[in-house]
Length: 178
Image (cartoon, rainbow, N blue to C red):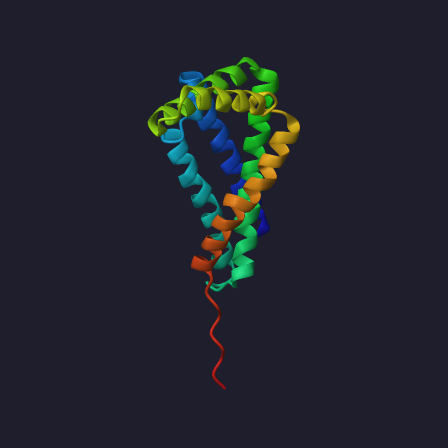
């Protein structure tokens, strides 16, 4: 059971890296576009791999599994895939191509400024918000931020998705009639 969860977590991480590399080599600015094909595919994978792990655990248990027993493989798969993906992103942004940080910051600023325009913010409010955003972007790709992002992502969406999957997958063994 745990072997399947680990294998699926490794596969999830590798597939995430491959998708990220495709986006990086074709259009790095799209890494900030939350409605693009790669983000949608990422959301699907975020559900599919933990689901497969919980389903395999259920099948290995004769078609029955308790909520907690289904939660563990789903969460293990999610955590391993997320860890691999986060380590890759950290290495990409800090060692392989540090200039990508500025590309992503510019894309985030452009997206945010577009939202400000839609909201009708005054020029003064835009300048103040831009200053705050610049301060936040100063070290957003560091090791501490990556670790915090990983931990937060384990809870949401990780634990939430895994719990939903476990609730769907669970099937209690019927009590024997005596």
